[in-house]
Amino acid sequence: MDHYYDGNRYYDGNKANWNDRAPIHAESKTYGLDAYVSDPDRLSGVVAFDQPTLGDLNGQRAVHLQCHIGTDTLSLARLGATVTGLDQSDTSLAVARKLFANTSTPGEFVLANVYDAATKLSGPFDLVYTGVGALNWLPNVDRWAAVVAQLLAPGGRLYLREGHPMLWAIDDDRDPADGLIVKHPYFETDEPMVFDDAETYTDGEARLANTRTYEWNHGIGEVITAVLDHGLELTSFTEHRELEWKGLPQMLDAGDGRFKMPPEQADLLPLMYTLTARKPS
Image (cartoon, rainbow, N blue to C red; front, top):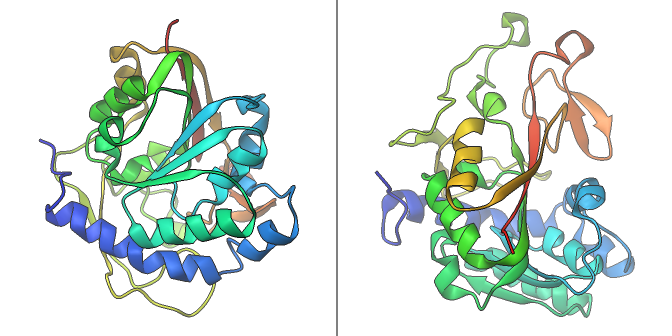
């Protein structure tokens, strides 16, 4: 069952939450928007990590689904792509448009539910890019893959880097002395996991007014099967031992804004994965 429609309480709740987050993130040191203005070569830590796998983007039409405030989208543009960003949060897109204006970077931003992307965007695209912390907001990964396939031009590529579903399943509120405890579903479920938290993941003291969010996990097999079922060819799959945020209290600073498990747990839990696929010519 797919709950993710405009007017639905899950969609509306998540949109309100991200509308609250955007101005906080825009002012945060975590995102550091001023540094993109002062340094025309600056890339986000996310895209800098992805760059070796992304390869040459010069002349590529790229769409960034669930682009938030546009730092990764801007970084794709700085690697040579002609970029379009799509997000459901109007306040996020307002920040992204301002960032692009302040850096004199051409780009287009579209306000839409990701499931409506194929009808809202003027594709096709050479690259569909989805960054960390995106799929967990979507209830149905098969429908997402169908949209990706529609957006891609023949020969076009999907680049997905995401938090690992095994990580999402771990209880992040437990004392690290308890070990790694599975609390949440690993597989996609009809009903979402519901969280209520006034804090966001950046620095600062600001708190959210819309605190309740709705999320879904998607197992690795479910993601790969969805991609294959919609006609894409898997070209690479890598699991990572580092994460873009401190997802568990015992994680240690790995440098470059990422975190890792302590040495005694380093081989127990994958933290992220990268999946690339290609639409046949």
